[in-house]
Length: 212
Image (tube, rainbow, N blue to C red; front, side):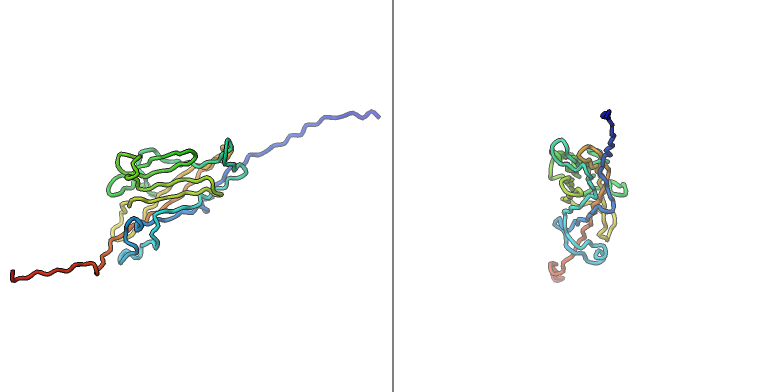
């Protein structure tokens, strides 16, 4: 009946997905110098500012949604990387002030092992000597929202006397999904001060004799 075939073209657009960062979902944590052979608890006038625990390690979620491109193996491999620091430069608190430990400047050193990055805060001249480590923090891209793991090894020099005051350190990072779309984020770890304690039962009282 004279029908003929026809050819048509259909255009389909596929929009890419990208990871997202939600600051309100980040789990910022606190560690306490009391856990480094310190004094649990605190007498007055330190009690009002004492952090109730003595942990020197902290882990928390990073508030990342990887989206559709969440592959984590082979060529399609999502990742996390630290950003916003310079190797060998001073570590700054969240107010932009350089941090010290036992009077020595704390500096940045990055260690990369495969897909895992570890950011070190160290003192002294040898960044590869673990005895110089003040803290370490790693990023883990295997979890649903990304995770950081922080460990405190040495105390920090806190500025406020007669107070177990806090020092917060901000860490910036880049999250990259499996097809290399990126989003920037950050988290904070707070370090609570330790304080001296006098134990009356351990005081050894003595005496002298005026006759001698």
